[in-house]
Picture 1 (spheres, one colour):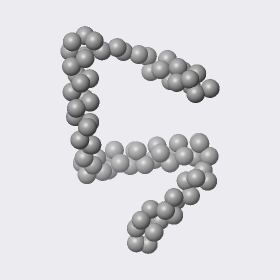
Picture 2 (cartoon, helix red, strand yellow; picture 1 turned 120 degrees about the vertical axis):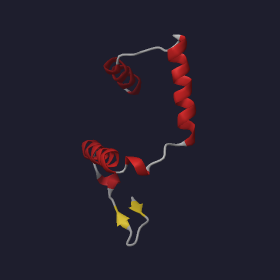
Picture 3 (cartoon, rainbow, N blue to C red; picture 1 turned 45 degrees about the vertical axis):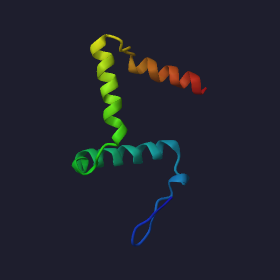
Picture 4 (spheres, one colour; picture 1 turned 45 degrees about the horizontal axis):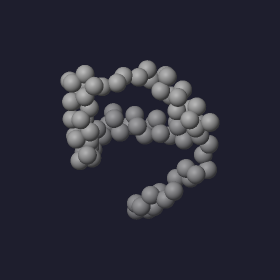
Length: 79
């Protein structure tokens, strides 16, 4: 992957294995959250989705799932 910059930045992400990609992702996420959060504007659709979710919670129609169970279910679907 080449990122447009001056000079261009070549990140060979396609050559990394899943574990290495996960570590890069975690590093970038922490860096963004810790140091650049105020510079990033959420996408326009985000507010609408959050409002819909709040309405479900307030009306009692929200369905809550155990996170570990949700991941197990996803893994089963992908297997």
